[in-house]
Each structure stands twice: as C-alpha cells, then as structure tokens.
Image (cartoon, rainbow, N blue to C red; front, side, top):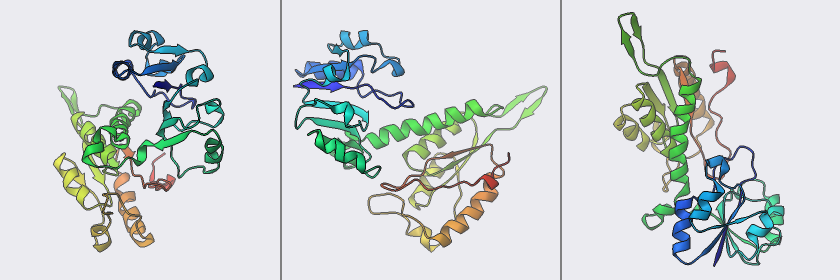
Length: 278
C-alpha cells in the first residue's frame, strides 16, 4: 500500500497531515509513504526528517500521488490537486461537506473516495480518530496565547513594592472542548475567567475549572442541548436576552475568546462592534 501526504495549499494553513513519528509507524506496518516536497515546512518539519522516518519525497503533487492508495490531508483538496490519482483511492481529511457543495462535483470526477474525518462518530472505539476534539483543544489553548500576545499588560496579578497590577479579565464564549481548554489555560496564566454557553451541562464544567458561569438560565436554556451533546440553535428571543447580558459583561472584560460552533451551519455571530470599546 502506498500512502501519500500532500502539502496544504491554503496560505493560512500551517499544519501537515503526518509527522515523522506517524510516518515511521506507517512504514513499520509495511506501507510505502510519499511526502510532497516541503509539506512539513510550516510545521517546522524538514523533508530530511521524513526521509529518516522511511518516507520518500515527491518533487510535485503528481509524483507524490502517483500510485497512491490512500491520501492524507488536513483540509479538503481541490479537484485539480488530485489529477492523476488512482480510481477509488481514499482521501482522508477535514472535508467540510456543508461548505461550497459545487467543489464536490469536481472532486467526484477524480474518482477518489473522500472520507470526512470530522464526521467520525464520537464513541469510545473512535476516540483516537476524533480530529474535532484534538484540534479544538489546541485551538482553545492557542486562542489564549494569541490573546495574551495582543494584550498590553500581564495576565496574572503582579504585586511589587511599586504597586499592584490587577489580573486580566478573560471571557470565554462557548464551553465545548476549545472553550474549556481556553478557560484552563487562562486560569493557569493567572487571569480572572468567566464563560458562557447555551448548554446547561457546561455550567458545572466551567465552574469545575474555577471560572464563573454567565448565562440567561431560563426554561429554553435547560433544553438547549442535543442528544449528541451539541448546542441547539436558540430562539431569537433567547438570543436577545443573552445578547443584553453579554453586552454588559463584555464592557468589563480585557480579552474575549469566542469558540462556539454549530455543526453544518455558520458559526453564530456573538459580538457586535457597538459592544467593543475602540
């Protein structure tokens, strides 16, 4: 079996679908692995590192894909980037099938079989393949680090003979995997953290991490979670009440991190310009 790892084409994508460690595991299982030249550079992984792990380096996309039975990618590839792929080859990655349906017409003509890893069932047997949780966890952490870099003061309380710097106030909107990691990271850095979510179960999770929960806790709030554990889309009335509470709370915050997502739909717009002090 030949496995191909392609270089991500999006300018803002720094990830790569395999590391030297995972390549070594695939090679140990008897697979031939081909890495497109420069695929790991944005992740600070050199082609030489992949070679040491047993992979070959393809000079072009075409040479990398030639004869491949399986292709790993981070984001959905374009149809043109799969030219010459084997009929029936598996392409695994984040496919985002609810976005830009027209692109799938071209992808279907390539003869490849696309597997959307974000649709992997969230069950015990599939936990090691749950890309949503692993990437959301990192996103929550990175959100706090990026926020701290932009913030012009220290996050924790600083007490010296010259005076006291009060801790930063961080508000996390959405307390799923990303939000909970953001809360934990901000707390570890010494910030005073508050958080909100439309799912009742999130309140206990937020408070267990030492943050204060902020939400309109009415009857609709109590029914705001699907059987799969995702947030439901809330009514216009609830959104208005929550917006009023959020607006007054945001005016007192230093850093706001938004993480809320609804599967298959655009992410909710949680903040308006008039709420921000510019």
